[in-house]
Structures are given as C-alpha cells and as structure tokens.
Length: 265
Image (cartoon, rainbow, N blue to C red; front, side, top):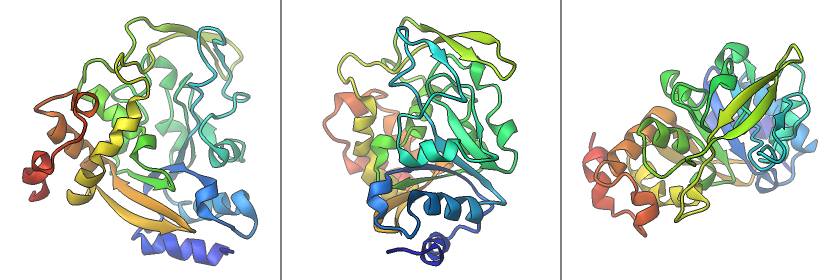
C-alpha cells in the first residue's frame, strides 16, 4: 500500500519541483493500492503542484453529440476515467467550456489558461488549451496509459493541418455558459475513414519519443508512466510526419531512420 509520502517521493524522483504546468492522463487501477484511494492520489498531486498548474482531461466526446447536444460543464461527467471525474468536482477546480474536449485545472492562473474554449470548433484547436502546453514548457504525465491516450498529439496534428483527421460536417452543440445562457458551437469531431480510432496509432511514435528525449519512463505507485515534454513532443511529431503527414494511419510502423537526425539534436 502506497502512502502520501511515498507518492510525493516518486514525483520528486521524476525531477519535478511543483511549479510546472502538467497535464495528467491516468488509469487509477494501474497505480495500485493507495492509502485513502483515489482521493489521496488527488491530494498528493494538488499539494505537490500547488505552485504550478495541474490539469486533467475531462472529455465528453462519448456523450455530447447531435443526439445529446447540450454540454453543461457543472453537470456533465467526464468519459476519461475516475481521477478526472473526482478532480473536476473539487473545490477550486475550474473546467473549460469546450463541449467535447474540456480540461479541468487547479492552481496558478487556471481560469485564464482554460478561458475561451467555447470559441473552439475542433477538438484541439490551434491556440487552445492543448496547444498552449508548448508555450508554457508544459509537461504531460501518462499514468498507466500510453500515447494512445496522449491527446496533445491530436493538437500537434491540428497545428500541422494533417489531412483526414476531422469530419467535414460539424455538429451543432450548445454550451451552458456561467450566466445560464446557451452558446451555439459548431464542432467538428475526429474522423478518419481508414481508422475510426485515430489515437491508437499514436503508439507508433513511442520509441521516437524515447530516443529523442521527448518522453522518459517513470513510476507512480505501481504504474508504468511516461513523462513527456510538450514542446519536444511537437518537434518529434512534426519531424516524423514531414515526409508523409498521414503516415501514422497509412504506414504499419515508422522506421527509426525517420527520426535519426532529430535524435542527435
């Protein structure tokens, strides 16, 4: 059974000081038995990063659609795990107004960081919350999950304008605003005719990220984790996709020669 002290020591061993902007994708089950359970895990993370900005995805893409078009950020549960659902209900946590790919944040300038997502019209719009991780030297910690859950890679593809990643026709959705009014949002969803689950192919970049120091293997509880640097992830994805922007879907694997030059930079 892991204690608060042991979990904090593991974060410190990752080389983080607590002032970072960090986005966490997680599997609570992978962490193992923790004294106090999931709430203790969140206590540890919020305390450690109290001088930084702690972010969790609180996505609703599995429930908010044309058949169920109203996104109420105060009521709609997250579809991406236990920790994200517990986190968004905590005092002081702010949730963005993106109808399908919201984030929740706690800490330094959380409200400002998460602002204006109701103006996005794609899942990870350039200049939006995911893309902003690059500008603030943000980190991404994948706890017990791999790059198939690394939503930031979607934002890289959007910035690079990779073709065949988004539906042609947007969904008409409604966001319940803080004042109780509804704002209409036209949102394109992720779509590729060849691969219905695009992010599953992100695992083809796993070795590239390790070799190019964009990610490194760490531990949290029992969970095998990946600590990623958002800026370096962007550089690696851009470099690997340059010869064939659709290679993650169209090529069965990516040869290591594709990133050899970047490995030395």
